[in-house]
Length: 254
Image (cartoon, rainbow, N blue to C red; front, side, top):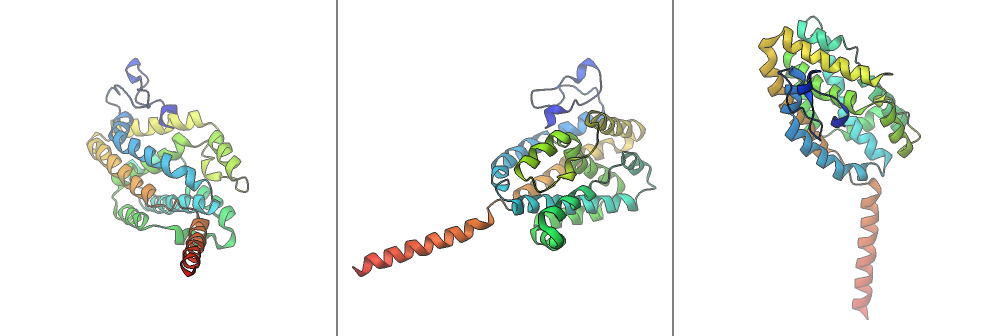
């Protein structure tokens, strides 16, 4: 949750609103990027509130949902590795995050030996488009993508989230949420990383702020695209339709 994450700098002006966004960030890049995603993030949260209860009824739906973000994170980490000598990218890589491995571990537990094929089947056209954007991104755009794709788990992950999801799907360890032992420190380091980028590379500030908003919107297209109708629903609907049709036919014969 965004409200769990203190944003901006550490001055009194960093006080946040009820939904976790800074009233005044004193010009720090992290707060500026958070403000840039505010509208899209609020919209995305509303979509998730509608879809998540359905997704949590079926492990295959849950697996399909995280599979799409696995493909995004895998593509991001591949491109970050290619740009590892870039000075801005070095700042993000110094956080030591390799989160695609956590997604992969969970997908293996959910789908079994056929996990990669299942994850491929779950991949949506919105995810394909997002991956293509990541693959064409320059180093600064990759850093903005990291803010969104890593930030979601730095802010919303941790042992508590892991435990909550495990209560719903106990046969999976939900490694993807196990970002760090000390989540408070991980969040502080994440915030400090982007604030330092803003100070050391002021020429990239406006691009990073703009691109953060764009990548948040791409996240929302993926959230909208993932399947949330249980796989058994179509079979149940078909049986009901056939039964209803048979009843109508039987009545018409009387």
